[in-house]
Image (cartoon, rainbow, N blue to C red):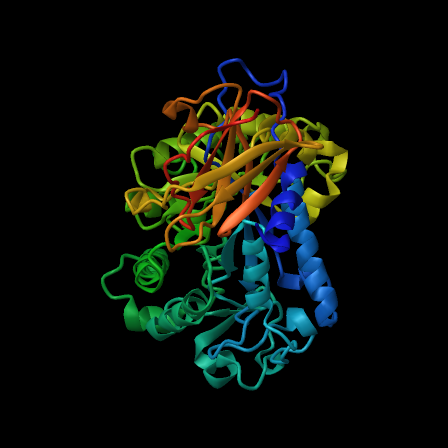
Length: 509
């Protein structure tokens, strides 16, 4: 018989994962996808999300993180993107950089446990993917190097850091700095069971000489037409080298970036979007379009934090532009959604419409290059002002979804076909027991329910997917909507989101 832990684990997700009829909102042609990124960003810098304040006890920190996982399940998400290196510091015992002061209030102070180890383990217990979110260059939210920990690399190597705008940054123009930053981030990937390595949208903080890297430009900039081209090459090297090194350290880990949403405006570059906003190519020296076209990323998640019809950056124009950029490449496209703007009284009237975010996801459906969304930030998914988030969830997340498979991993070895031991009518519904086969324990089980005998093709989408539950050697799950005559199948899912062949079918009698 399954263990009590296994039984409870299966039952815990039942309410959230149970299938419900498609809403009237959904068109007759709409088929819910089997795979869709549904993520949220959990920010740690300035205690935006977790921990909510500095100096909480270990028990309080753990309880807060578990509450974020509860929220992820409530919003029917399948992934979290946790910021673990916000300011050249660490949420794990790093040999490269000190403990983050956003945890304890004192940089370098041991918090008394391993926050990253705890977060990864608990996230996986829920059957959720854990993407480690890093800021590559930011050193401090203040500009006094003497306030850094005495052992901080910026104190030991003062030539590595530069002040700008009241903050400190590593200098991206120094090869030794670039390698050090990569080493510091890859340490977490190598030592922890992390599903992906993720950068945010901060690269160079400005396109001006106020960021004083003139000495490095004189030393390394020969052959470049100007400072901007040299800086762009420095960022390109960080991105391309990270791709190579991530694959060396953990080949099945996803590597991606969530840049600001405008590469260049069409008025600047004929290849640009029909916008008139800040350009990442020029302002941050981040050639986001180039990274996709050159195949340097597994995915890109542009932050399209504008409403439909907004001048000078219209969501409905940026979505097709990014879809065209990703089309024909092996870079997946996920959209960064501005949950933080919806219902904020300081925002435009369009953001006061509870349907705005839902309309974004509706528009996405017309672009098959888009395979999901990431929501910023976790607080706003919880607050759900004007019910904008819950409206989007009700309209679009009516079925569970597996996370996408990276194109480069799609041909890898699939999990073993599981066995469906039984599907028995019990008080309150149908109890389903899935059993793994082979040596590898599945990361998840996907449970399908059909009104009659299933055909193989019906496993390609989520119309009959009723639950995705955390994997184990065996799992028992309760379906409150099951009834006599239904047929159940289970599919094993591995950490790369590859799926097995469907199990044997089991009719409810």
